[in-house]
Amino acid sequence: MAVIDDEPCDVAIMGAGAAGALFAARLAWAGKRVVVLEAGKPWELTDLVSSQIWARRLQRGGAPVLPGGSHTIQAEMGISGDAAAEVCRPPGAPYPIEPLMSLKRAEVLKRGFDKLGIRVSPAPMAVNAVEYDGRSPCVYDAWCDAGCPIGARANPLVMHLPATRKAGATLTAHAVLAGAGATDAWVSTQRTFAHVSGGTVMGDDPATSVTDAFGRLHEAANVVAAGGGLFPSIGAVSLTFTVLALADRTAGDMVANWGSYAP
Ligand SMILES: Cc1cc2nc3c(=O)[nH]c(=O)nc-3n(C[C@H](O)[C@H](O)[C@H](O)COP(=O)(O)OP(=O)(O)OC[C@H]3O[C@@H](n4cnc5c(N)ncnc54)[C@H](O)[C@@H]3O)c2cc1C
Image (cartoon, rainbow, N blue to C red; front, side, top):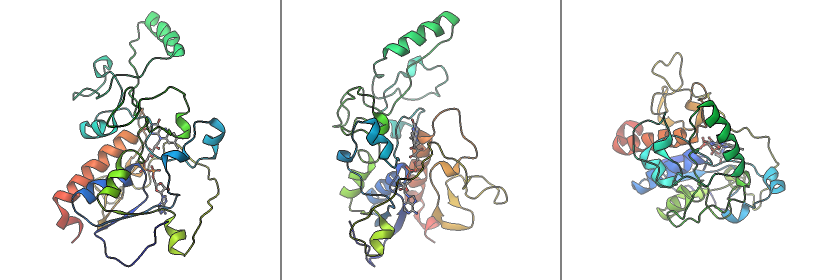
């Protein structure tokens, strides 16, 4: 467990989840002194065991299955999918990895859709169909909810946190307890929700929104909110890919216009 000291930093990030880890990586690469304070435990891939019983004990987080299309993010994550088969997909680069194998039940359902004349395409997944960027391919053991001990499923542990550490950022897990002098931390299992959105909604009008279009608080230029809180409502598909794309956009804007974020 890292110890919080009095060293000055340029950026303090609360939470090493999907968005926080991406911000940490981007800003540390840009040479900013970054401290990440994480309330949860310091997860390792070895903590993720493919078993449903174990999955129920996990306090979940991270970036699992992701549809959509930001080029930088999909190249970093390694999305498996078939862009040509998706009719509603915005124009852009194809997915970097071929789709995952279809399971039997998907083939059965596809037969039904085909009969009705409804076109289907493989769901884009942040799971490697083949080896990608040093990460093993999926072994189809189907315990994705428990995490992925081989790192085939993209999450902060295999995406941005290793790069963040390499770039010299300080990551403090169980931050509050560490600050209070704890040497070991036991956290009770919490009830979790999967696709939380709203709360720090983005918009142009401070009367009806909390942040601007970059997630910066209307009332505090040096405080940025990230994650699903920025969404005024939930979309038709899972949100994490957009969470990451927004974080990527804001981190880029912070680096380019640093003076306006740290007046
Ligand atoms: C069971 C489940 C299944 C999901 N499946 C999908 C899916 O299939 N597709 C998809 O796109 N998305 C899915 N999601 C959603 C996805 O996990 C979230 O969209 C994504 O993690 C949001 O990223 P975030 O950075 O905003 O928050 P998180 O990744 O949740 O990160 C927040 C971090 O902040 C830490 N934290 C909280 N409070 C504090 C504090 N006070 N101080 C310090 N640290 C703090 C937390 O411990 C956590 O590590 C799923 C979520 C769950 C729970």
